[in-house]
Amino acid sequence: MAFFQVNGFTEVLKEKRVFWSPSFFTWQNLCCHGSHRSPLPMKKAPFILLINPWIMDFAAHDLWAKPLGLLSLGALLRDGGCGVAFIDCLDRHDSFTNEHPQCLSATHRKYGTGKFARMPLKKPEPLKDMPRRWFRHGIHPESLRARLGAMEKPDLIWVTSIMTYWYPGVQETVRLVREIFPQTAVWLGGIYARLCPEHAAAHSGAHRVITESQGEVPALVEAHTGFSLGNASSWGEFGQWPRTALDLVEHRDFVPLMTSVGCPYRCPYCASSVLQPARARKSARCIVEELRFWHTEWGVEDFAFYDDALLLGNEEELRKALEEVCRHGWKLRFHTPNAIHIRALTQDWCDLLHGSGFRTLRLGLETNRSDRQRAWGGKVEADMFRGAVQRLRQSGFSSEQIGVYLLAGLPGQDITEVDDAIEEVEGAEAHPFLSEYSPVPRTAMWKEACAVSPFDLAGEPLYHNNTFFACRRPDFSLADLQRLKGRAEEARRKLRGAKGALPPVA
Ligand code: B12
Ligand code: SF4
Image (cartoon, rainbow, N blue to C red; front, side, top):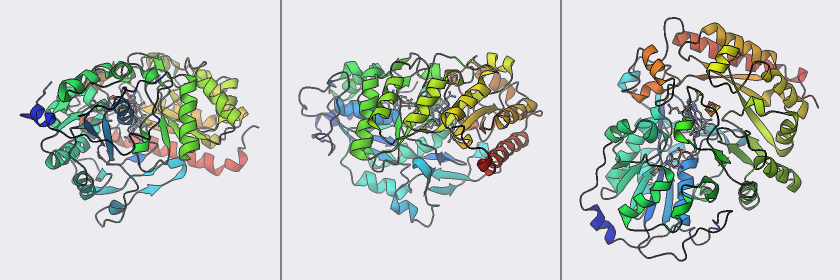
C-alpha cells in the first residue's frame, strides 16, 4: 500500500499553535466505564479536521445516513485531548447549496430522513451506458471551499469513506481539501479504505490510507504529531468508546446508534466479519446514558440503529436499556435501516420493541428458499418468517412498519426465486424491499461475483454499485432486476392502499 509523507511535514507540525474546538471544555464526554480523559490538556495538542465526503451516485437518499465511524473517532480524539472540527459535505441544511441555481435542493422527510441536495455531473466513463443521470450529492463545492477557508489550518485532516463505489466523492473532497490546505496531511479511513486499500492508495489522493485496527490509531497519531493521546488504551475497546461526537453536527434530525459491533454469522456476500471481526457490546448503562443525553439535553426523538446484529445475544444489555426507556416514559422513535434478525423475534422481544418506540423495522429474510437460506449463512429458516410477522402484528406493529429485505441478483440466483420471495412477504402482509446485490471485496462470494460479471469488478469499484448491477447476466438482466423492483414497489403500494383493512392486531 502506498504511503507518502508530505516533505518536511514533521517540521511544520513542531511549530503549530494550540487550537481547541469551541465545545471542547463544555463537553461531558466521559465513558460510562469511567473517565479516560487525559489529566490536563497539553500544549501543542493537534487540531484535527474530520470530513464526511461527497457522494457521487445515480441516487442517494438520506435513510438515516451519518458518518457514525468518523464521529466516534471525533469523540475519542477529543476525549484524548485533541482539538476537533467536523465538516459534513452531505449537510442537507446548507442554505447556500439549497438556493444555488446549479443544485436541486435537499428535502426533509419523516423521522429525520430526506434527500441530499444534488448537482448533475457528467457520468464516469465506466458507467456511461447506464440509462440514469449522475450527481454529486451534498453541498456545493463553493460552500465547502468557504467552510474550509474560514477555518484555522488543521494539523491533520481525516476523511472517511463508506461504500466502495462512492470513491469519486472521496477523490474530489480530498482534491479540494488539499488545494486549500496544501501543507496538511490528509488521511483516509473507513469502509472503502479497508476493503479496497490498494485502489484507495492509488486513486484517493490521500497522503495515507488507514487500514490499521482501531487500537493502533493512537500510535499513528503520536508518530505523526508527537502528541500522545490520553486515552490510547480505550481506542481498541468498543465498550469504552465515549458518546459519539454528534454535537459537532449542526442539525441533528436523528441520531445514529451502535450498541454492538460484529455479527456471529458469516454470510458469503457480507463484509461484516472483515470490518469488525470481534463481537463487542456497550453496556445497558452506556446505551441509556446516550439516549438520555440526546433526548433530554438535545431534544432528539429519532434514533437509527447501525448494529449488524442488534438483537442477537443482546439480552443483557439492549433489553435492559429498552426496559429503562419504557420506565422513563421517553417518547422516542427507533428505526432499524440495517436489518434485524428474524430468529430473535420472540413475542417478548416484539412487545419490548413496540413498547419502547420502534417505528421502522427492516427484517433480513433475503430469500424464502431453504437451501439458499442455508447457503447464505443460515441466519433464518423458512418457517420462522411468518411467525415473526404475526408476533410483530400481535405486539401492535402495523403492516407498513414491517419492511423485509430480499436479496436480488446474487450469483446463481434465478428470477423466480425473487418473485417467490416477494409473494411470500406480500402474503404475510409485510412490505418487501429489494436489495440489489453489491459485490463486496474480501467476502466469500467475491470470486464468484468476479467470475459471473462481464465487468472488471476488481479493477473498478464503481462496478460495485448496487444500482449498476454488475453481476447481470443473460438469465438475470438489468431489465429483470428493474421489473422485480417494480413488483416489490407495487406490493408495498397495494398494502398501503389496503391499510384500512389491515389494522394492527392489538
Ligand atoms: C449502517 C449501514 C448502512 C446504512 C447507511 C450507512 C451510511 N452511513 O450511509 C444503510 C442501511 C442505509 C445502508 C445501505 C446500504 N448498504 Co450498508 N452498511 C451499513 C453498515 C452496517 C454499517 C456502516 C457503519 O456505519 N459502521 C460503523 C462504523 C463505526 O464503522 P466505519 O464507518 O467503518 O468506521 C470505523 C473505521 O472504518 C474507522 N474509520 C472510519 N473513517 C475513518 C477515517 C480515518 C482517517 C481513520 C483513521 C479511521 C476511520 O474508524 C471507525 C471506528 O472504528 C455496514 C456494515 C459494517 N459492519 O460496517 C454496511 C455496508 C457498508 N453496506 C453495504 C451495502 C451493500 C449497502 C447497500 C448497497 C445494500 C443494498 N443492496 O441496498 C445499501 C446502499 C445504500 C446506498 N445509498 O447506496 C456494504 C458495503 C458495500 C460496498 N460495496 O461498499 C456493507 C459493508 C455491508 C456488507 N454487505 O458487507 N448501509
Ligand atoms: S447476518 Fe447480516 S451482518 Fe451478519 S454476516 Fe449475515 S448479512 Fe452480515
